[in-house]
Image 1 (cartoon, rainbow, N blue to C red):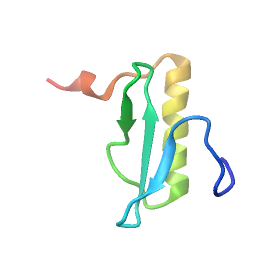
Image 2: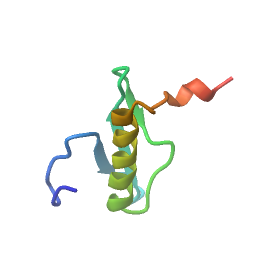
Image 3: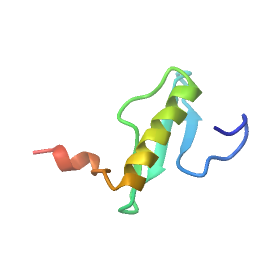
Length: 69
């Protein structure tokens, strides 16, 4: 994980006015995706992005709306 103020190579994390952290990334389909929930810490948000990135690399990523009926 990058040092505070560093840049991630995948996705980004920002702190909301509430103090919680939001994670966003650009999916393989070219659309910007936001995590379905916010995180208590920056580190938790970064770990979530790492998991999403690994799903994409392994070819296991599924668009979040694919499960909607």
